[in-house]
Structures are given as structure tokens and as C-alpha cells.
Image (cartoon, rainbow, N blue to C red; front, side):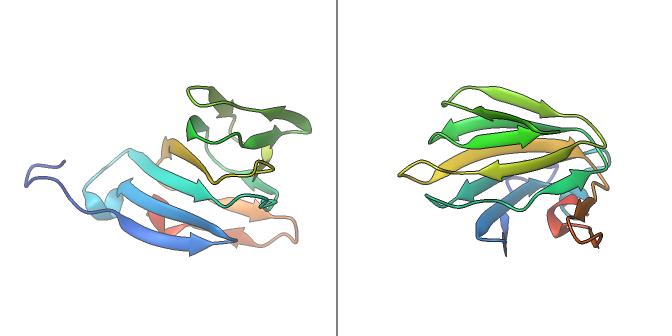
Length: 124
């Protein structure tokens, strides 16, 4: 909700995941970004290095997050932090889709394994 009321989420698809952006500069935020990501069952994510901290709250499913080589599987309600500069990958080895709420700072960029930098639209 911004000063004018509740805004619908802007939806983006990338690497087999669905990102629903609720808070970003395009919705009026100056410092924070927040989105809900849905990861299909069996999906292996793309490893990438993040420029800003990211906080992950598991809403449903049993996703796995690898941060700088440390792999952990999570249950609903669990929270994980990926520090700025960390290499991370979000997978969903479970039989059902997983959903997470993610927050970060405006301007987050991600470096893919091939050295390409991506500026996700949900952080601009």
C-alpha cells in the first residue's frame, strides 16, 4: 500500500520462477524492494552473485538455498540471509511448488555464472 492505496503486483518470469513485485522504486519505494517468488517443483535455480543483502522468508514448500557453497533446506516460516557479494542459488527439490517472500535494497543486481550482470525489473 502506498499513499494512493493498494497496488497490484507486477509479475515477471525468469529462469522458471514467477516473481510478483509488491515494493520497488516503480511502486514508489526509495530504499526497499519486496516480492513473492514461486518456484516450481523440481526446479534447479541459476547460481548468481548478489550486489545487496537479500532476506528470504519461506511461505510454503521446502526449498533449498545454497549461499557461498553452504546448502540448506527450509520449511515454511524459516528465514535465511544472503549477504551482499554472496553466491547463491535457490532450488526446489520438493514435490510441490515453493513460495518465498524476499526483501532487499533498491538497485540489487545479480552476476550470473557466465559473468553477465542482470538488473531485475522488480528491484528498479
